[in-house]
Length: 200
Image (tube, rainbow, N blue to C red; front, side, top):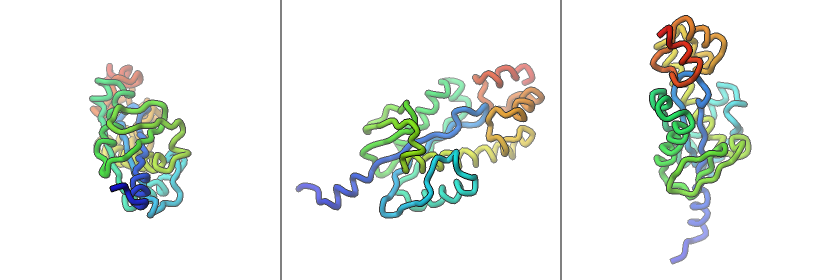
């Protein structure tokens, strides 16, 4: 029996947006998120997470988790980043996030120009977090999830200031690295961390 129009319409909404947070920092994990939005429950204000204030991101992240058809997150930590490099770690996180999706999407749209190998069709979208609502939603989920992980690391290593820079290579972070050496949360394959290892 052929699909009813309503069934076809529902299936056509199963498009996942995928984005990551944390490729550039010197410490902490890389996090990927995948989101399938529900067109029956629209969310106003979705945008690239980097353009949003922290409180707006947190508000939207809660709405996304409440209203989306599916939200998944995958985390790949510093040890794996150091072992397989940040690009491969990012693709691994994206693949893991996609594989957790339920319902299974008919199409996955990934921010950027590189995509993981998965068993569903994938499109790459350069600047996707600005032009695709599902990718924007994924960017918000990935960013807020990673920020929460970095706040937890700050509680463990307060002298590094992870609550402020979230692991990025700010002057204050570099100074702390040079003075204190790297923590287990640092990516030792990244040059500023390698240079600080003599203090480890």
